[in-house]
Image (cartoon, rainbow, N blue to C red; front, side, top):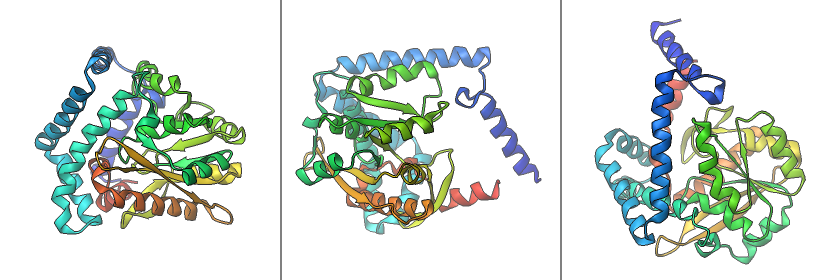
Length: 319
């Protein structure tokens, strides 16, 4: 084993030992630091709840603009990834706008914490999309971090359809209740993917007729399949495909498309038939559906969080 690989492995081992989600533990210093972060997060959420809507959007877009100007590594990553997917003439505009739109997405997600805000007022779901969702019975619904993605599940739940989402739990378990409160208040079942028995809960939810939403478009520390995504080699979690095949349920792609003002969106829904497909092939079909949705509104995707082919090769060389 090379020294470089050994140091990488040691760093990963130290990270795992400190990750409560992986059975690790915090030292006293970490407990103090994370306790302070928790209080700050709770305080900022409380402040956001009290800001007038227009001011909330202005502040969050200002945060997006600030990150664009002060986080060059994120801008470089976004520029590299956009450059692989779009013509050169569009790169600068899309990169700049994706940071601003990330601020808008944050503001919209924070608005969902307010009981008087209806997701259906922000998301239009036309009759064909409703028919696909309502006629599926239990189904795995894949979406993307495209626009204010937190709107999708509550908007579907407001149609009277039983809805669940699979999310990664917070690094700090004490934050989960605060992060999940608005989801549960809107009738959305929350399944933390790292919890014991999460897989069984997902299958039970599907077989009981729930629509179970997942976001497989960004890298995750789970088993993945190699796919072509946004025109480049990438990895995408294979779990959604395996679950759909194991439970014998359809797979739907449901992504937001922005309307004129950037505050309202339309939910585009399509069916991906899993019959006769392997989990790997089905995952590629998912990647194709999400790629199409993202390329229709590229400035609304989180390019700064994506990984490119270089990251994939580094990951493989470290194995």
